[in-house]
Image 1 (spheres, rainbow, N blue to C red):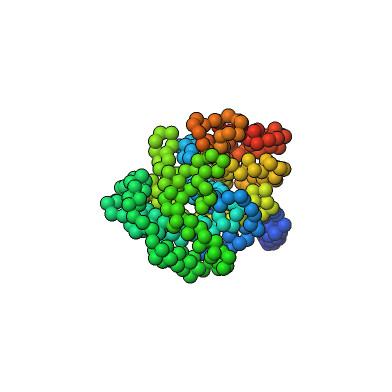
Image 2 (image 1 turned 120 degrees about the vertical axis):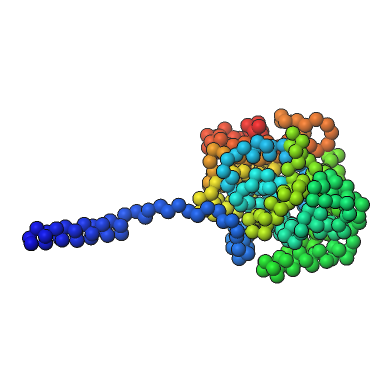
Length: 379
């Protein structure tokens, strides 16, 4: 009996110690959830508001890209394993990168609130459209051309749209549908100023049509430099002649539509050198155990190096969850006096890749001092 009592006391003591141990020991790490496959309208708008910063100024509207070489790096980028999150800046060239790289989620960070509203306009038009032709008809307020099929190439689509004209009636109807979809279907509380900005953007596409150029309606030529049209950008290819644009095929367009329908492309207002947007995105990704696969910066760094803002930008980038595969995608324009010169007259660009980890290592060891250092290390 005495031994039995001692045994019961020992068991009770062990149980007490175990309970105390669980109470006082560090919390066991539980793996965070992966990025969502769908985001609610409430959470989507919550991120737009909470992650964004006050809007800033840029000298042009940037309604479409002016980079003709942006697809050339896609075959190399597609080799990156385990797609995570995509970060980008600017208008719809991001859509081509997203449909090609297939990230789990995407965040578009731009200093201009107009860019956020441009993406919301695209979101509505893409979600409302049945296919590529329907989307282009809505974007440019033109009736659907005949003699096009699901197999039509991007060039065939634009050739067909050249045969039809836009109308004010279609433009008004499409714009009402955009506002109805954003404000009623999704419940996004747009201000009157937001609505006026979307009206301005949509009217630019309606008047410009497939020939709309960068920073419409300003001159097509600035300082003698040539800007490509929307149609010309959509028919660009990689160096093997393959077109990866979101207009290139119905499969690409449907893939983009799936991202938009599930609120997986989140546009934000943010300065790359700001205090909130990039850091908020980084925190969100860390909470979901995700890394940045690709970060498309266009040529924003060129402007950041006009002062000391580049230091804050790279410091912000250092807070993002990255791995050895995380890659910067940057645009480099000729006439800058560096390498990667493009042949021929006018505005031409090269698209460069740079591993983010290596760039940050160079930054922390004070090897980065100028924009030249950034460009020259890229491939």
